[in-house]
Image 1 (cartoon, rainbow, N blue to C red):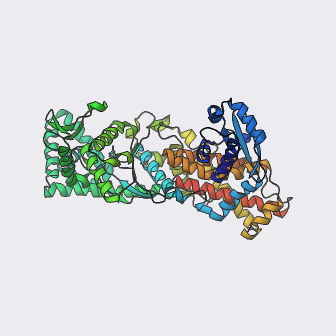
Image 2: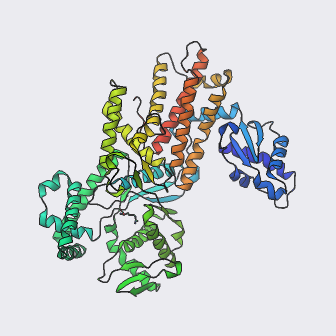
Image 3: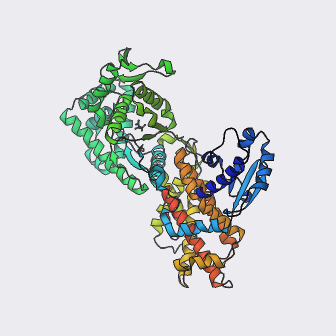
Length: 581
Ligand code: ARG
């Protein structure tokens, strides 16, 4: 679509040049002002004329009408322009619409991806980063799929992405778990279900500590020993970490998530001294109530605590070391932290301290925040999101989907594999289609509705397209060599035209998602594409034998292209596509 936007901008530019403005407006500026009409029936590209109101000294509607009557569309890809209030709407003709069809079929999974945008730019993307020795809750799930999807999207735009898991593998909680394990632990229980068991021990520690304040002191001593490299305790800690990572990796494999590096907080322990020295050298460190802090009063923030009274490092200290290390090691252009909104202050403080330290690259750091989960009803409604385990939600989804499949399509081959794909698709789509800064509403009836705005609906649409092509394969599909003839010899109904033009918006949705770090933009796009496809399918009987063979062939080509784009878009969202369901 971009090249057509440039075409539209060029036409407006010619008009403006004839007005000899005092401050000429560039074609590039015009291009960035273009929009996608809210209602596709109005047109394919819209120009908001109020932008020209001031430079031309006229009301937008009047400018719009003048533009509509004066633009010369000969030799352009546009079949017409219409003034709708202050918006000038451009309509693409058959040639442009079919270009999207040609390109989708030629480029397949590469269609819509624009490697040039991020070429030569390096992004460090930090996501998932759970606190380990704890079970994975639904908040971690959100972080993980959001991060992986952003990783996929940036890569689709040609950025070099380094995916890092900043595991929470250090801190006083390890003293507590060590205490609990040494006093009440059972080897066999740990072997059987390590994370669940460690979580239980941690909970037990807290319950017992309520009646016995000595426990906290004991746990602190144990953590001091871990910090001091006591061989036995360090080995125990190492064991907890190892077990946790192993279990996490199984979860990641299930979700299609992959990291280039696992660099937890513990990795930075021997790197904090350098940072502390730097803070001293730049006179940023001050003593406050026994602790070493950087005061941020001038920026209306509480102090950033670097060292406690007894010299222990803190979350901020390790984050300062991590940022510095990452810059030195990876030389990123930007570093994105996918972390919940509740840590906004933490990151504002972190970025400010790095700025005060004179790190110019602080400008490339961004906190990509996200909201919480809200469970509407059912099994999980009474508990808080933080304590709802991802595995439980996925298990519930899987069994519900399996039930639906057993009812709807009992003879489906590979039922279990499909149930897993659809269950994951349902939960992931519900999450990623929500604007990340908002809370995710979780309502079982909605999430699994095969007719709703859901993952299963999209997967079902994909399976339907696949099934049409399978059926057609028996009589012969369109072939590459026939495509041009098919395009030339066929008329396109408005519904088909709209579907083809929608293919052209795919690339813009990827770019929008990357610009705002919002996979929801692609999620909404693929929903719109699927809805249009289903209405095409209902109204245009693709395999209607009373039609000319060429007409059927062309329709199959359209189905093929749409199917490819649905798969590609869902792939960016970490959602797999079953061939039948
Ligand atoms: N482990 C932390 C938590 O679960 C998130 C880490 C976020 N990343 C960071 N660089 N601080 O809350």
